[in-house]
Length: 256
Ligand code: ZN
Ligand code: FE
Image 1 (spheres, rainbow, N blue to C red):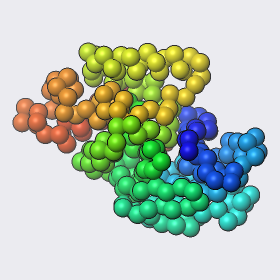
Image 2 (cartoon, rainbow, N blue to C red; image 1 turned 180 degrees about the vertical axis):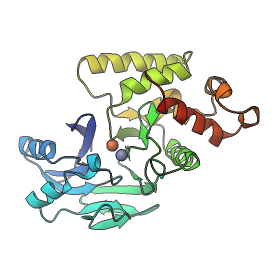
Image 3 (cartoon, protein in one colour; image 1 turned 45 degrees about the vertical axis):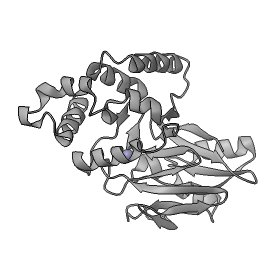
Image 4 (cartoon, rainbow, N blue to C red; image 1 turned 60 degrees about the horizontal axis):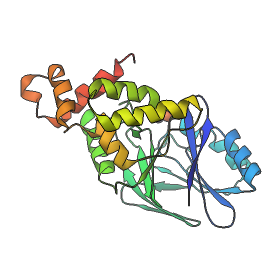
């Protein structure tokens, strides 16, 4: 079962995954058009929708998809800002639908109720873990986001990371500012340049690659700590949460 991204809106990805009987799993449909096009092109019908968080660019297409396929199950976090959910799931729950099976991991930080789905060798990470970056902290604290990322970092390294946005190129320039001496990151950054020059998605990435290159998963790496040393007080230099908060704040103000 392969995960395939559909481009949507400005820089969103709607993820799809094939199942049995020409069925299609749809993750975070920010708009309906790309899903309907893909379904028609490949003679498939959406059989279930998974939602990671309530932001409009991840759920905006659901009403139109439900109009066209009225009985679609919609799996979502426990959050009333997602009104059309048919199944509410939280940490440790299992999504069992069609031929698919995913474990739910709650990952607060970008939003309070953000969840991720792990199964079939794939992680649908929404706006929590990006390639070479992580989501902005709209509702959660740095401590929460760090804990969420720590949990995702513990998944098998070969896991394919399928995130909600094509932000990899700008994330790479920030990551290189943090860790200019990281050879794996340099290689990944060059690969990303090539892929974007050809208008190809830089995703999925692998968790192994993120562990090697993504500064937000590398708060314990000596070069990351050294780059953050001037952004925390001397007594915070071994404080992972303070270091993570400083890294996130640096990225928020980073012009690229
Ligand atoms: Zn979002
Ligand atoms: Fe988003």
